[in-house]
Image 1 (spheres, rainbow, N blue to C red):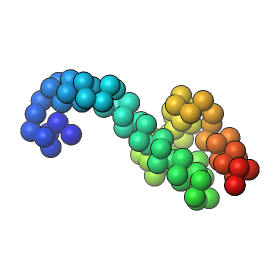
Image 2: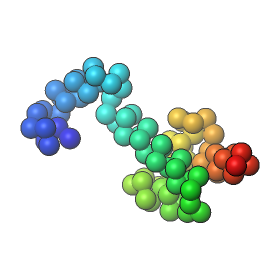
Image 3: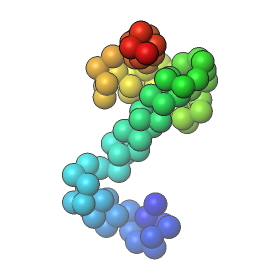
Image 4: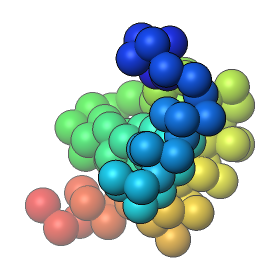
Length: 85
């Protein structure tokens, strides 16, 4: 992103954190989790397929990241959403 803006990575990081209150990697992780929630709700894709779609190197890391931000696993989220509907 810094290259696209023609600024240094350090400056980009400082400005991004100042403006959003979070660092860029956390922002990207949150966006990936939000997108994965949509996929869990609206598709029958497996956890491995969703992990791959979102660019995670390993489904286990995707599950760990999802749980870090949502406090439940993707499978539990999907089941909860399906029961709610």
